[in-house]
Each structure stands twice: as C-alpha cells, then as structure tokens.
Amino acid sequence: MALLPILHFPDPRLHTKAAPVAEVDDRIRTLIRDMAETMYEAPGIGLAATQVDVHERVVVIDVSEDHSDLLALINPEILERSGEQIGEEGCLSVPGIYDKVKRAERVRVRALDQNGERFELEAEGLLAVCIQHELDHLDGKVFVEYLSLLKQGRIKNKLIKRARITA
Ligand code: NI
Image 1 (cartoon, helix red, strand yellow):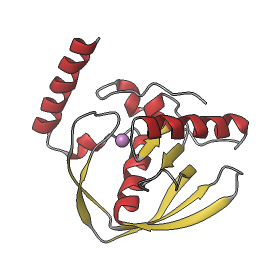
Image 2: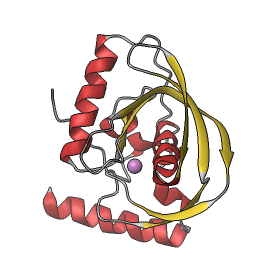
Image 3: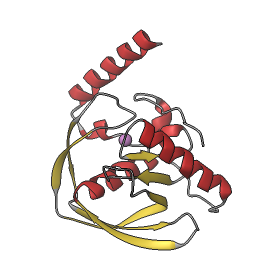
C-alpha cells in the first residue's frame, strides 16, 4: 500500500479527461487500494484517479463514518439523474474551500467492480453528491468550476499563495 500525492487546484492536470480502464487487473486493484488508503488518510469521502495524476476512469468513495463501506467504481456511467439538492462541497484537491453546489438528488450508476463485473447502483443524498463530484473529476472538472468566475479567481489566488508559503 502507498499514499499517493494529491494534485491541487489550479493544477492543469486536474483538467485531463480520463480514459476508460481497458482491463480490470492487479494494477487497477493496487491503484484502488492505494487510492482508498490516500482518501482515508487525508481524510476524505471520495477520490478520483485524476486527483492522483492517473488518468483512468477509477473512483473510490466511502461516506460511512467508520471507513466500513468502500465503494470502488471502474468506468462508471450515470444512467439516470432525478431531483435536486444543494449541499456544501469540499474537495481534497481544493483544500480548505467549501461552497454550495446544485446536484441531482438521486442517481443510477453503472460501473465495473474490482473483479471486472458490471453492476448497477442507486444512490441518493450524500452518496449521490459524492458520485457526481467524483465522476466530474474523471471528465476534468473540479467543483469550484460551478461557482462564479469571481469566486473561482479568489480561490485560485488563495491556493497559489498558500502553495508558495508551504513550498
Ligand atoms: Ni474532489
């Protein structure tokens, strides 16, 4: 197991569109284990491969309080969205920044599991938000891009300044 370095906004690599996983093999299972360890250590409730500079369609999510419910989605697709919810979001790639984003209340998702088997999942509430947020990462989109350009500019400046101080 290994902790992976997480890219921080506005790193341009966060805007890479991830490619589908061609084969679910040991390399992908190791990536999932390392991503889960990195997410738990951070701590966070979701992490997309994009955020650790691996541009393949893999995300890990665990919205439980005791790290007991790891969900790994490979090549995930949202089949259906319904309803609406507005919640405060944060992101391990945008540390210390939280803001409201409008999302679907419920989603139905199809993905491959760690054995390469296809499955479907229905999610609502926080899990649905997390799935939408992580799938955005795979398409190169960070949640702050839903905010006004003014806010995005402020967030960029803040994170660039902070990176200079800690570098
Ligand atoms: Ni994120």
